[in-house]
Figure: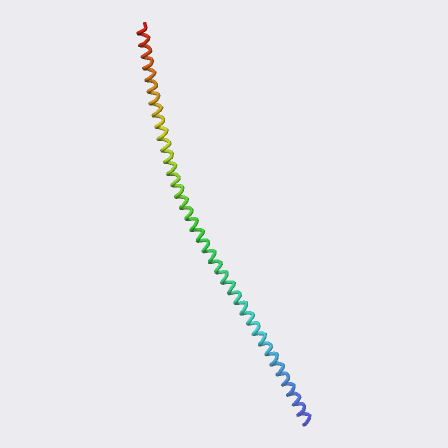
Amino acid sequence: AADAVRSAAAAEADCARRVRDAEAACELARQEASHQRDVANAEAKRADAAEYRGLRADEAVEEKRVQVADLQRRLALEGDAFREKLEARTREVAAAADARVEALRRERETFEQREAASLREARADAVEDARRER
């Protein structure tokens, strides 16, 4: 009977040691699981932050695209306005040049008419002088 008690006490001690070992292993597993959750949470936060930065970058790119499109529209409008002004000025200069050419043509015609009249008059005077001398 004493051997049975000793054997039972040894078995109880062995069971208690195994329970303590199991509890220690369980605690280590809980700590490892907690650590893995912390790591996973940190990775999730980094992923969220990266996604946020990506979204912000996409928004910034879209904003810049809109600005570029606005600038292109403004430049096109300003280019059209400049071209219209340039074409109007070209027409004005061409009209002024045509008017000046026409004025010079009229002056030349008037000069040629006067010169022809002077030559006719001089010829008539010369003919008259020649008749008188005869």
